[in-house]
Every structure is written in C-alpha cells, then in structure tokens.
Length: 116
Image 1 (cartoon, rainbow, N blue to C red):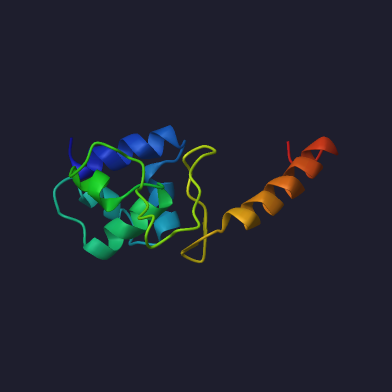
Image 2: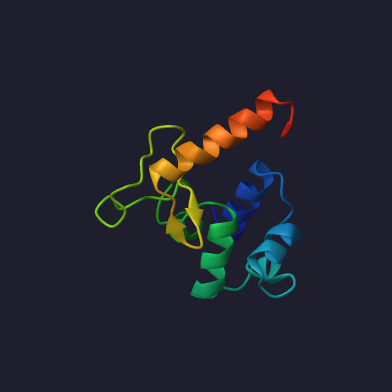
C-alpha cells in the first residue's frame, strides 16, 4: 500500500475527506493528491500524520501498526490503559491527573444533558 493509499484509508476511517485532511494539516492545496506520484516532504508528512493520529512510519509503510508509539522513558507520566489514545496539548503529552480532571468535567456535562 502506498503512502497516498494509507492516508486515504485513515482519512476515510476518521470520516474526513482528503481535502479536509489537507486543510487541517495546513499544507498546500491538493498536496496529498500529488503524493500519488510524488514523495511528500518530511515536514508535510508529519503534519498529516498528526491530523490522522498516526506515525510517519505507518504512512510510509515502515510499520503496519497505525497507532503512534510512545517512548515511556521520554514520557514517563503517560498512562495508556484506558483506550490506547495518547492525548496532547501544544505538542506535549497531557499528564494522567489532568486527563482525570477533564474526564470528570465532561462526565458532569453529560449527566446534565450537555455534550451529547
């Protein structure tokens, strides 16, 4: 599977068009479509991987696992036990204690009928 095909597949799973992925990544108009025949720049590929919550290794075909990996040594406070999702804010992992507070706030809103 090509880089373009992997991007297309992940975008579809996330109910995004390739144009929307392109816009969210902030790369040039129709850049992703050009990747059918051209190689993407590393910088643009990283942006698309971030939008699709995957790794550049997956998009390039270096791994078949679309889940981004976490180095526990560089991010020792990340706890990936709930749903295997890594949450970040401004490029930094969100500490587990913060996630607990956020979840409690969201659960409270849901109980009040908000956020559904």
